[in-house]
Length: 255
Image (cartoon, rainbow, N blue to C red; front, side, top):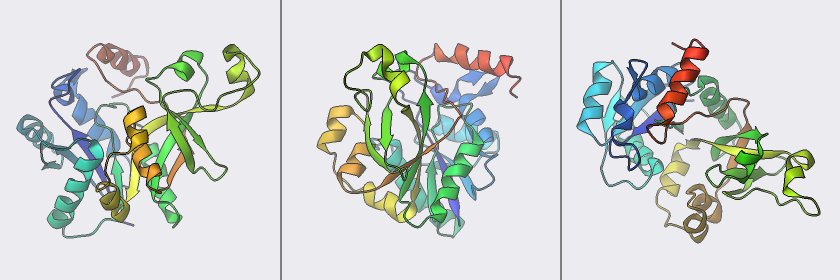
């Protein structure tokens, strides 16, 4: 199975301009993401997808593979779709699976990438992602933490910024004692043909309501499977998050 890992990296982030190039303990964020993703041995090719020449030049300088993409994409999924076509032409091969790797998670777990790729041995898998159990009430009720519920086969039923499911006849303080809740870990893997199909879909009503792109896919009948991981996600959304990442690196002796 041929797979490609694509790391979308934009310079013009609204809350943190130039984020991919920001240094974390002397190493840029995009280089940290790239180096950790490269440890996923099931990724056949790994590329950074950017629309900015500064990022393009930087990735080349540290020895990474990089592809320039359009500035007009509305999402990382759309950028991955374009880069898939460019990469297949560049490498003269077809890819079976595409992994969309978040470019603002400098501590990404390579094992999670391998797990997602392995799931495609099941021919029923169209799109795969990850979920992690919630143990903290603040996470459960935060609209910034996306929740997911799945059926017994790991197929996602719905994603929401609200807690899912609602627990009747008990107080919110007891919800975590009554049921297992899961937050969505925002890494996706797609079959190449499915990525091409979903990138042509129009924005859906559920997506507009929750501001979650994956609801567009569900609303149009595509299947998303969410598998459990014990690895947490540490993403950088604003400059203040850098200190948290640096503390984790220092305390855990991460290179």
